[in-house]
Length: 253
Ligand SMILES: [Zn+2]
Ligand SMILES: [Zn+2]
Image 1: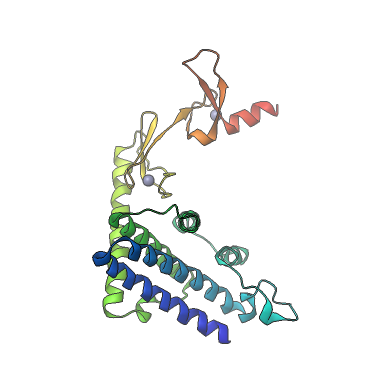
Image 2: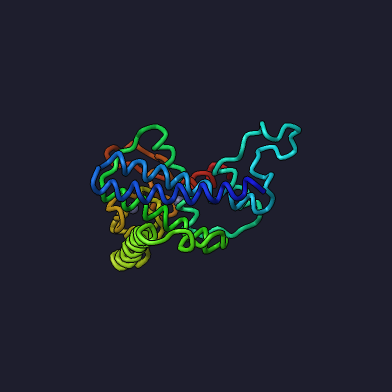
């Protein structure tokens, strides 16, 4: 039972630390912002592990059947996520997008490909808060408000609300501006329903990325670059593309 308590306490410590570093960042600049994101990412991981140990404390270990349990490695975030899926838990579209995005974020942090301005940091923390709230709403783990008080809670809510408002706004703009009246997934920010389809392009109303689309010569639907292959480039500069689905169907006939 010891681990269970430690995990939750450590998680909340990391969360407080993250919010404090964020506040420092407003005065001290980017290195504090980086730590804010690192601490928040750590909090998120511990929250997941805490969730797993609610089923049984020994599940924190990769091999709970080991004879030398104290020497066993503990699970990581992705094992904890997999546990959730194996339990048959419903995972919402937004939350799944968040997990994919968090994977990329952690990878970028580890490989030092990590340069963010103050605006982007607000957005990254806002999204991590959205993911935390979504996880808590879906699985009722902890009520963050009960563990955070005063200024911590104020920053947490502010960043979370700002992100939600900006996202909701982008989704409305996307469906209004889209040729097909529908918002689309954006590869760049990894959010659903945020990109407007205009001609042969997707214009993200959230992160402002523009993605070129390619029409499939067979089914005439539009696809992203990684979803098509060159079908015919004999008449350069005109090149025909075919979507992977049509291509596979034709090749397997
Ligand atoms: Zn985007
Ligand atoms: Zn096609």
